Structure formats: C-alpha cells, structure tokens
Image (cartoon, rainbow, N blue to C red; front, top):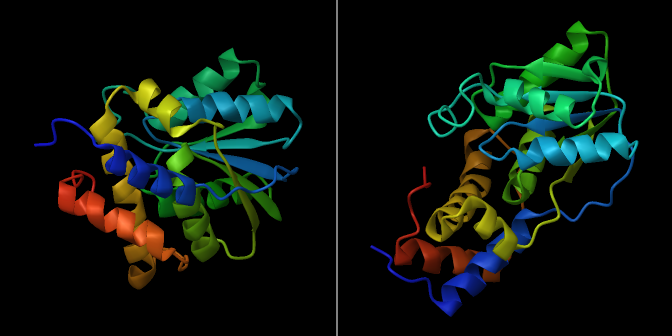
Length: 217
C-alpha cells in the first residue's frame, strides 16, 4: 500500500500527464464530441468552447459504467447534456449518444448518430478529460481516419486536477492506466500507434513497479 507519494513519483506523474495532452491549437470544427467519463468538467469546457464559437453542433457520448453509475445514474451523456443546457448551450445544438461503453464506441456511435441526423463532418474536435486527449486522438484516428481531428480539454495543471478529484493515488493510477492503453491498444487494432518517449516509458515503469496499478488492463 502506498502511504505517501514521493517527489520522484510526482515528477513521473507530471511527465505522463504532459505526454497525454496533445497541445493542439484550438480552431473551428464542424462538430465537437464530448467524451463521457466521471469528469463533468468535460461538459463545462464543451459549453465554454461552444459559446466561443468553435463549433455549431455538440455530441455528448457515453452510457453508464461501473465507475460512473453512482455519479451519473442516467448515463454520462445525459448528465453532460443537462449540465451544458444549464450553461446556456441550446438544446438544438446538442445530440446525445447514450450507449457507448468505451472510447471506440464513443467515436463510432457518435459518427453513426451524426449520419442519422444528416451530418457528415470533415473536422471533429474531441473534448475529453485532460489525461485522455492522446488516447482519444489515437482511437479516432483508427475508427474515423477521414476526419480532421483535434483534441481539447480543460486547461488544468496536474495539481489542480488532483485537487478536483480528491484522490492523489487514483489520479496517478488513471494516468498510468491510460498510458498502458496507448501502448497496448494499437496491437489489438483499437487505436493508431503513438510514439512514447523513453523518458515517459521509464516513468511509467517506475510507477507500475511502485504499485500504481489499479487501472491497468
């Protein structure tokens, strides 16, 4: 059991946090897709970007998972929509995809929903929790290669995100788990391969050896 996180472990976590974020320049897109998770900040930031004029149409995608059922009993996408409506996004600018159970389904089911409503977007803005940007990008690149895809997330520092979640070890576990998926999912056909710098791999190995493993496959 990890009783206290060391300075080196925080540095390793920061290295992985920085890697997960794509650093894409914000630019207008035909549609945005808000990827469901435990993090309501995705919907908050999606509403902010909508009001900034970055896209005219927003899809929220996500069903109910074991880790979000208590927080979002009606499903991630439904709760995201309700939050965005409260923040002034008009109802006719939101589509809800309430069934996806993983990131691949987030993309494929959102694309199918858009087609059902007569939309064939060329450019897509993926809005996710901060440490999910790269995995979302890799997944969309595989599932929807024709789309011009960019990523965005709330501009939070790691310290701020840890405070928002309230569980230091869990946040590092999630960073490590997402990196494992970035490494392993291309081998399974779920995502495109992403270059992982040696320093990031070394940080990942140290954190796994130290026991930050609750979110590993």
